[in-house]
Image (tube, rainbow, N blue to C red; front, side):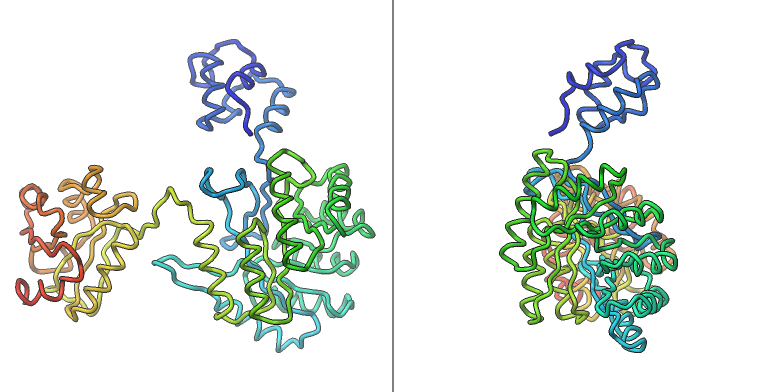
Amino acid sequence: MGLTGLEIFKQLPKTNCKDCGQPTCLAFAMSLASGKASLDLCPHVSDAAKEALDSASAPPITLVKIGSGDKAVAVGNETVLYRHDKRFENMTAIAVSLSDEMSSEEIINRAGQINKLVFDRVGQMHSISMVAVKNSSGDSGKFLAAVKTVAENTDFPLLLNSENPESIEKALELVAAKKPVICGANSENVEAMTNLAKKYDVPMVVRGEDLDQLASLVEKVVSMGFKQIIIDSGSREVNQVLSEQTQMRRQALKKFRPFGYPTIAFASNQDPIQAVLDAGVYISKYAAIVVIESSDPADILPLITLRLNIYTDPQKPIAVESKVYEIGNVDESSPVYITTNFSLTYFCLAGDVESSRVPGYILPVDTDGISVMTGWAAGKFTPEKITEMLQESGISDKVSHRKVIIPGGVAVLSGKLQELSGWEVMVGPRESAGIPTFLKQRWL
């Protein structure tokens, strides 16, 4: 739980200097409590108060960043047990594993398969998140060669899975700049692995044999001054993993600090179908990273879809970009359709325009991702906004006519829209499924 405004106020200097932009320190404290301001806006807060407030206001589960560049992965930063309480912050990172016992050619082929694991879901591109390289051979040379080959053939962040500090160090000398996560700290090598993680500034997985040992190991790592931790309970049986993932999340939310870190789970069942089912359980119940061995799109797509279902913010509609879309081989005589940028609305319209076999342009007006009728009722789908879209989208340069088709449900907009835009407004069907018939009667 976050601090209340009064609890924060007690830590502030109480000078009411207004340097933070608020009239009083109490007002500033209330803004901090509601997340509308940050502590660094106060130039007079003491170091002790800053440390206390930063610690108390930190999310129950620490944010950990893996990788660099466009494909960097963020895990953790979670604050709730159930999505409907607020929202989940960061999607589970799906890592596809390969072994250093594979030949160089096999690794290159697997990396190529992994690079193609990209899926289009309602106009958004989704993919796996990481590549895990496992030191199955126990040989440092083979592991280094496998890591080198993978790094040369994919841009995804790496998970270096080895319990041998020597193997990990050689790999880090090669790929530390890519900020991989090292996986293999346990009761026997925790000090050596922590020193490597600190030296190369990379996150680290800590594995215990049970939850009690895991908590002790995490406390030891933290005492060494390292907190970029991902935790592994050590279990591999799905029922035990489910129980421990739930227990760790519950304890983290109660501010039990040894479990206040993102978790990792391994779907290592030899049956590929069961492995996918296991991975689905771990995605559903709090694993920040799930490692699976399959690179088959038929196995990965269901996990990507499940992840979207669970981690999409229910308070934020999925929207498409507000721009001109061309459906089919359009020309200057093609019809122009107006809709909103709610993804479901857009894709329904796009499908029906395509099925009409009459190429057309679609202009989705930015309504913050809400549907036609909802946008109209909320004052976000208005003649003014549609006119702005017509003027700024460049559609007038693409067509020779000045006719635009609006949804039949908002026919009331037609008069004002025609007056403001100068375009002839045609009222289309209430449902986009009626477009083929509408075109035959009114356009062709």
